[in-house]
Length: 82
Figure 1 (cartoon, rainbow, N blue to C red):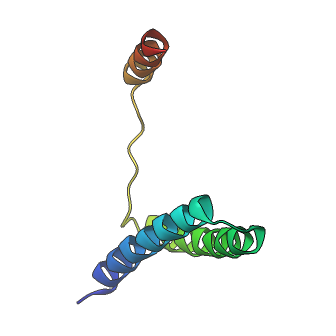
Figure 2 (figure 1 turned 90 degrees about the vertical axis):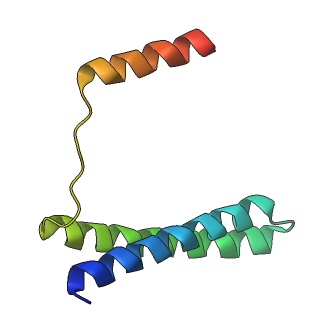
Figure 3 (figure 1 turned 120 degrees about the horizontal axis):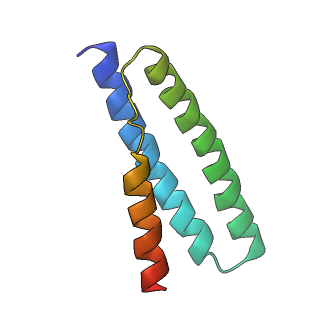
């Protein structure tokens, strides 16, 4: 398994952990638990960002730019549905 595969898998795991921490913070019943989950989420988001940046530098994670027409259509659809 190459570095790219390892980093892709790591990024997927980190994204899953972020999701768990987010829900833990939303569902927490005390301020202390909420704070613990929120702090863990922030740290995990920082790790996710570092992995993403490393992958982007190597050209392993390419983000596509949205077409302005699609952006306008999404805005229009959202405005119509609200």
